[in-house]
Image (cartoon, rainbow, N blue to C red):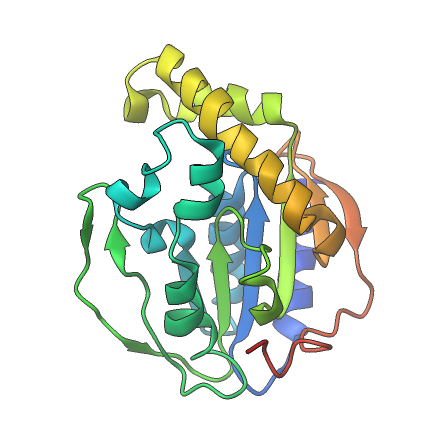
Length: 234
C-alpha cells in the first residue's frame, strides 16, 4: 500500500477508536524500522481532530551505568537493562488507563546527558490519543497496558543499512555503528522476539522494507482496543 494511503487508513482507524480514557497506542519495531517517522506523521493527521500525546521510549532510559553493567556490547543488557519499564507503566500507561487520573510524565531521563530530567507532569484529555514509539514495547511488562499495538517489521540487515546512514554522526564511524548493531542491538532484538513474539501479538503488523510502499502483514479486523486489556494487568 502506498504510504499516504496507509497513513490515512491508520489515522482513520485510530481516530474512530473510543474508550473512556486516552487511547494508548504502541508503535514498536527494530531500530531504524521507521517508528518515529510513522508516529510523527500519524500525530500530524490525528491532531486535526483529536488531542495527541506524542512520547518515546527514549525518554525512559536507565542511567548509563545500569544500561552497560553487563558490558557495552551485551545483547542481554540491551534487552533487559536499557529502559525503566516500571516508570513507563507508573508514569504514563497507568495514569492514562481506565483507572488513571490522566496526569502523566512525558519523560524521566536524558540519556545523552546521562541525567534525570525535572518532572513536568502534564494532564491528558480523556479523548486524546497516546502515540508511544520505541523498541521492546510488547514485552511482558508492558504489553497488557496498550490499547492498540503496531509492529513495524524490517529484516535485520535492512535495519543495519539504515543505521549506517542515520547513526553515523552519533557513533562517529561506520565501523562502530556496525559493531554496536551486530554486537548489541540486533541480538537484543532477537532475544525480544524469542520471548515476547511481538509479530504474533501486535494488532497491526507492517513490513517497512520499502518505507514508501509498506506492506500490511496483519490488520486485525474490528480491533477492540480494550478487549482483554481494559482492566490492566496488576
